[in-house]
Image 1 (tube, helix red, strand yellow):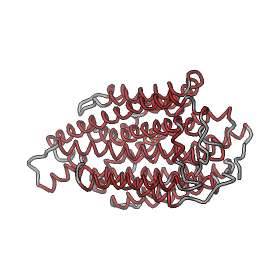
Image 2 (image 1 turned 90 degrees about the horizontal axis):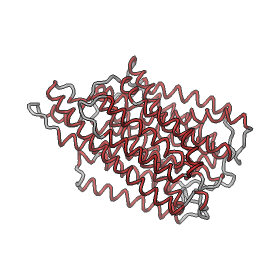
Image 3 (image 1 turned 90 degrees about the vertical axis):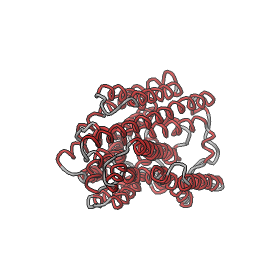
Length: 504
């Protein structure tokens, strides 16, 4: 079924519905972060288990996105939206009964599988049904919602936690999924690739195995040791599996994702920019909410409200400012300027310590949000413009894969850096060995062991936060240089045709 083109009045209905579906799955990446202290107390989860509870969703989300985009292209993007939202809502209902970390980790993985169907279908619905003259602003709105909904989700979750337990966050997921399903069924037109090939299930297995092995090795590195055989062997195995994925995809006439697409410099620049932006963004949110609640002692709603300036800067930059600047100056300067602002914001935030006031946090949040708003729109457009209309599910899935892969790696890498730094800086003395081990594995535990131990733990946590954010700032700064070089050689994305044979 080819893409249906709704009349102009219908666009006003389609856009908010796909935005709601997008916000439903994106907010779930970080909405549970505000509940980390409550989860740690109720389930006795260690810092590593908390990383898994958050990252299981992002990891499965990222690993299945290419398959999710392909399913939407083949069987219909509206069907993918409805099916993914149903899985998402059902898994959220099951999560409400979780009583231990392992169960919660598993359910979060199922939630990620549902989200992998939803997210690529939102962007491909826009790019395949909106006419070119309306598409840029719609993509800008998509990019703004994709970033800001995470922060708005934190605000709603923080409000719920003021009155109820962390399980109320999953009630929010269920309500959003039901409303989005009803609205999708009512107004979203069906669209699909009329020549969709068979699904590449082997390629999907490669991505799940490769990404899963890599992220597992990173999250477990603080306990196993970064230079241990288990960590280095796991990372080497992950790279070998992903190399096998590339070889497999190159051998297929209709791959899940054609690696030759990355020969298009603008496409590669867009994917790199999105990946590193969300590496920094989701990693930062994961760490800063623990800092605000466990170190500063803020209540969940206060912690969530504290991050709102980032969303306030991101939304107008993505939807209004970025498209106008791109129209005047081109994608390269806007993308690079946005990345430089993100790096600057992270550099400011890396100065936070256990006694910092809110003004320092605000001074970092504003450039971080504005920079992401500026960089997201040209980066997303570069990816989608590289593919024809019939393959927009692939372009959408690559963009979403870059976001969620970046997010999963950001939570894993920055979380592990913080945990390693915390373990090395915090040496509780005078405690029984089992209690000391628990305090070393979780700042939430250490915070309840008296003022002296808590103070040491907070200083150690803040030191780890500084190190992690410096690493994030450096990664974004290097990416800005790489994107500038790629786009300088490539010109605007439309100047280079997509490779022959690009597709699933």
